[in-house]
Amino acid sequence: MAQDFILAIDQGTTGTTVLVFDHEASIRGHATSEFTQYYPKPGWVEHDADEIWSITLKVVEAALNNAHLTPGDIRGIGITNQRETSLLWHRNNSKPVSRAIVWQDRRTSPLCDELRNEGLENIWQQKTGLLLDPYFSGTKIRWMLDNIPSLRKAATHGEIAFGTIDSWLTWKLTGGACHATDYSNASRTLLYNIHKLDWDDKILSRLDIPREILPEVRSSSCIFGETDPKVFFGKRIPVAGVAGDQQSALFGQACYKKGFAKNTYGTGSFLLMNTGHKPIASSNRLLTTIACRVGDEPVEYALEGAIFITGAAIQWLRDGLKIISTAAESEILAKSVTENDDVYFVPALTGLGAPYWDSYARGTIVGLTRGTTAAHIARAALESICYQTRDVAEAMQADSGIKLSELRVDGGAVGNSFLMQYQSDILGVPVEVPAIPETTALGAAYLAGLATGLWKNRNEIGKKYRTARRYEPEMDKDRRDQLYARWKQAVQCSRGWSKI
Image 1 (cartoon, rainbow, N blue to C red):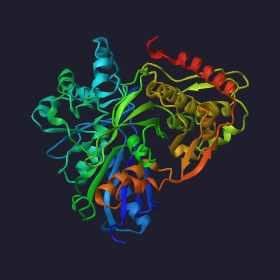
Image 2: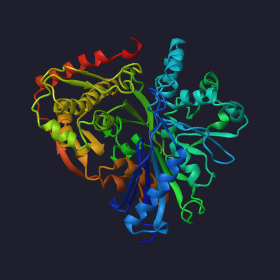
Image 3: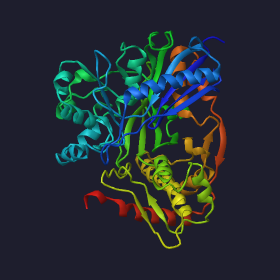
């Protein structure tokens, strides 16, 4: 039994989850913990990287205890992470220079406007596959270098390291021996040329970011380094798989063929389609991203639509409006009414992502009457997740020329039967829920398991994919299109609101 297990660290936006998988890809241990969200100013979102590290160690220990295993039973560690969240730290003592700036943060909107007004967005998109938006890491790094005293000087002298959270965890796990990231995370920084597979010097020059702070870019499935026994329970264990959370979920969903697509329902939602070994440039404001690289195999690409607020809208109903006490109550409320009564909720609480990319949009609820109840608002929040997914799916089909035949789904919300059925209805295609919904962590485990020899190849792990439930569309096309057209009108009400 020794070393027949993979430990997967899923470091998300609101919490860290650790899962232990065996050779059959069954979950043997599980633990999770939330951490603090900081909102120092409107539109600003921050995390404490030291808190994330301490929470990670606690959750790893709890997951191993839950599995009745010891660190010595673990063959390798996989890491999957919230992407774009940006952190700088001192190399000599591993101390963060400030809180991490989270992917949801909008403070760099003016800089993105400046770059866009210079006519640089097309060049940036051609090189990086991304659009000029505060979502990505590049402008966050520039902001920190400009606003934290003495930081730029230290950075140019090689004293500062940059990383997304995967790099931070790898650095900490290896005791500072490894400063690296993988192709999937590098492709989300707005600094990485996805064609040349290197940091882009011209982009670095325009943003005035020194190359010295950047991590080495490695395959998603390879040995990054070994854990430092002083910090990791006295053991040396290979850190062998790293991927951004959405690319990891694509891998965990066994979407290995061109045209296979998945949607992850978390704080936001992210629809990705595997497009093979050649990147597809989007004409519909989607992102072209690196899906992964396994060992020495060619890099694989994906089209992605990033939706900023989906599950976070349900959290807002709970924590902000306080019309529910648990996320599960949203389903009960939604099912208590037969229609939305023409109430639409556009959850642009941090702007709108794909395909709009409007950082000035704001959350909007339209269609309210004296007859509107909390149930209608809860239903509208769940329906908004499905409408936003269709926004992205339509753009993706136009870019790729591939018609979506089914959608594989994962994330915490897949247990909501109202949401899954409505998603199938609004898309007009079947929605498949996997037997293991934690596919983000599973993807990281697969990548680590391939690098450490627990699994031989993708054919072996692809056979482990199993469907728990399949939802078929029940709504007729006319009704589907009518509801969606009304959604598009609601979206227009939210556009550019904070600039009016």
